[in-house]
Image (cartoon, rainbow, N blue to C red; front, side, top):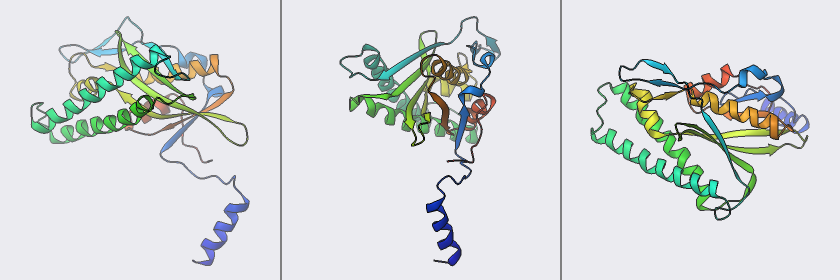
Amino acid sequence: MTNFLKYFLIILTFIPSLCFAVYDTLFLEVAKVAEESIHPINPITLDSNSDRIISDTLFISEKVSLDKSNEQSESRRILKKKIKSYLNRNKELIKKINSGEIVIPDNDLKLDTRLDLTNNQRFLESSYEDFTENKIESNINYYLTKFNDENIIISRTEIEERFSGIKTLEVDLVMSNPDNILKNRLNLQGAVKRASIDNIRSIIRDLRTNSPAIQKIKAFIISPILESNYRRQGFETSFCL
């Protein structure tokens, strides 16, 4: 071990508040968000010509807490069933892309679509464990964004509290309706856009109304599109851990 590294490690033990850039995570201070920037928004859908249509119907938001067991919460049972159906559909779409049943001539687009679905599969599987293990945890909540009674985005969040007493809501998993992933990638009729924007807005609205003690939101960067949406909402890279 070099002297420089040795001294650096010693400094870390005495100055735990040192700041470092966290490049795969974005942060937002809830108090800094303007009220007008978290209003519900209208979905944009694609028609048969792949033209964008602004819907007259707003997204619908729903929050499902894990503070009760599957047996005690109907909303949990419904969400468990929905995540399971998305898992099955996600696997089916990946299989059809790999077999050529779903034809995507552009190789780069095919790889990107398969990557999106593969990541979605991983997030769905991780979330589904909450329900198969029947985990009861009041700090874990799911935020659903729906359009025409169909879930488009599902975000898993967990509240963490530092020794300083500051509470942070961590958005650790963001899952999509697998059919909407495919439709958006291929610009197919029925694709729904802007759901992830409305989803994070609904989370901020809920915190301000029901959990004012939570001062910050931390979100992991899982895709360039989601990162762009979060940054437009005011999220930024933090230099303090």
